[in-house]
Length: 414
Image 1: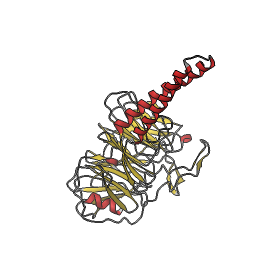
Image 2: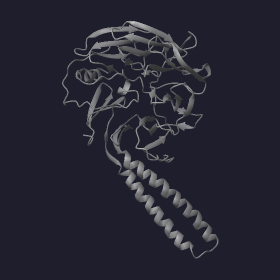
Image 3: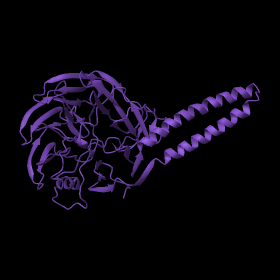
Image 4: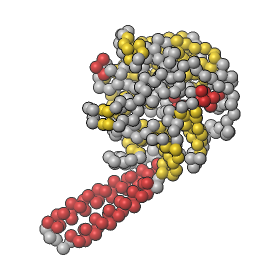
């Protein structure tokens, strides 16, 4: 955390970073190019380290028969910061406050207490700060730390012990996003009690719409597209709502840990193979396309996917990879049909059987060549133990971990 704030401090003339990963799509990308090596400007050491809700993964998911689980709840293992031209802001899961520091010096400007852990980064919108807390409230603060309004998103005031803290039975664990004059947040992680997704007026907190469901918990940063709200649900797949009216749309397919919105060139997208080891891509049919990935972080930019998983950072030629995945799917279907035809011809003792057998062999060889091409789509990879945050700034990748950040060249991983 200390080094993360140091990194932000040297960017005093850079573009604003108004929300987690920089924008409503959580892209993690900025065109700003930093001059390396960075020089120390200041250090801020919080009094308390983060107190994550989930310190490690469950030992097993017995219901779904999954074992050796990875920790997918890393959203609050660091104090993720946002910034404008004057200040740095972050929420604390340890002291339940929103903190503001001077960007130029790192000195404290103000802090504001909520009544529960603040596990998600604030969002800046039109001069105000929007924050969700485990106390069940959404807060709107001025950039001077004054309360503009606060709103209970839960149906009633009811506190329980959760994650060794006193929290609302409907904690806000999605962060708050604001787009086109509408704010969005989710409240609740106990489906039987009802879990709420709410759109409200950022000026006063008045509901625009509210949808309640009883199937999924809400845990993870919201993501917005032009027409949809995407809501992470912890270990389950994200679910999708209509931005305009809150109508449930669907849950995302697949079973990957990480997903991101991508822009596409209009070509049909291949459905990922069930055993695809790297990347899956889905077309939502409404102008939204998603990439999914089994790992910690993914950034999509300039035809490439930057991936972090299992202590390794890698870069994938996404466009070539998706074309080869499409070719693999076509060739695999062809090989399956040839196999069925060969079985039938052998049963009939047809003289055409050897010819089809040769075609089957050639099809298998073609699949092997396509798979080699897919494997070669990984442009580079390098060890990387910084698993809590990742952004792309110009041609540099920055990865954040325990008490450090590391910069990698996006071109070659050095």
